[in-house]
Length: 104
Image (tube, helix red, strand yellow):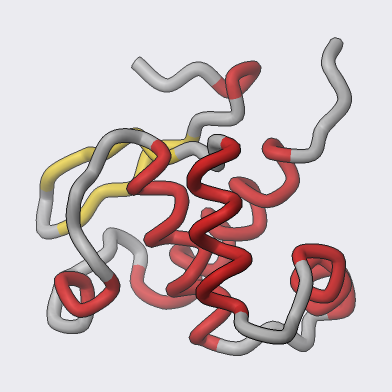
């Protein structure tokens, strides 16, 4: 079961539900995947609605890896994410928001 208070979201890929969360290690991998961009740049792109598909993919992969998945972005190229690209973008934004939400 997904725990939103722990920053978790559920992502269904090819009909299989996975838990995703941005752990410190996952955030470090995400920063590496972003190259010269920072996490602050990524947050700004999402807040401004100017994010790219590579941003969504990087967040989804990082979140899945933070949830224990051992795959790579290449594994998702032909995968079906439930809800399609729009749902994937929404889930990526939720992952990002939950990772930086102050504790209740």
